[in-house]
Length: 356
Image 1: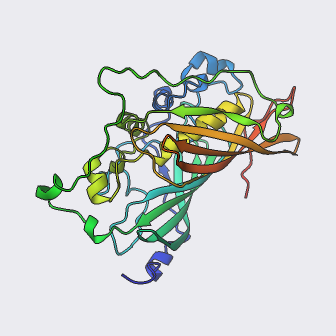
Image 2 (image 1 turned 90 degrees about the horizontal axis):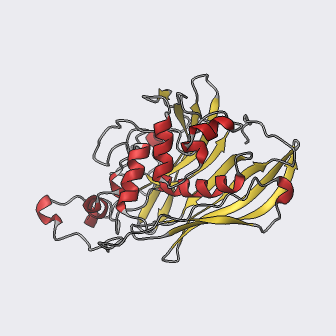
Image 3 (image 1 turned 120 degrees about the vertical axis):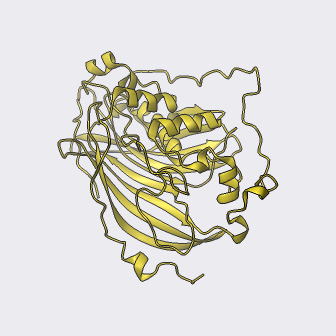
């Protein structure tokens, strides 16, 4: 294999944009409910129409990290939906792992909105990983509503890796001898696992209430099972096989087990931050890096701490460090969140400008 995989053909992709792609259906109350149910986030703005109508938003919202649903994606070798956005001409079969993203949320997304998205490739670069060369593809995603208004944008990082020769596809006859045993995730037969504790609504936080060092109320998810992963796949439409197909994950991709979706872990962090922000605040920006894998059986805790507060254009901005840690003691995601909290007596706008 060549020392550098960034060929002229690969480099030529930088700057290219996809054609605008409109979703097959508008966002519906059912879609918002399904996403909230799959991530176990009972926020009434997503699931209670009467409550949402009385709120400053005036209607049901879609969770801001789940405004696109892959409906009927192509089913290719790598799994449904995994190849549908772009192709990178690399000299190996490459599976795009979620490396992280930087989101900006610019206006609410409502039930009834039609979402259109497009991508632009910003950067492609190579690093050496533990298992060999890694290709990083950085893309800018922009989502607009039916009025052409930008609702969010995200700078997304996909990581592509070559598979060692020993992990190349095997004949079906040898598969049963090649799988590694994994523990069956809880619960055991006859054991009923209670739902995770619900966040207590202590009222709207204001900018004046915030102190540096204040901890966000942790959000605990799990023990994670493959059922959680399949429910999330059904809610957001991405059935990538490393999240539910154990033989595929082990034999085709060299993974220890099926892995928890990066997009689902993002939702857990979103649950944490939006719970801290409250109905009257605004979740403005969210940056996350995925640093490890979580598996069925893990309990995942989202936590955060306030690191800074500042005033800008008359609004109160609060910066938080956030992260995910599993019950095996591993930190598998880390990032930063920016929220805007109302000052006492202040009402925040619902439309925000993008930042650099």
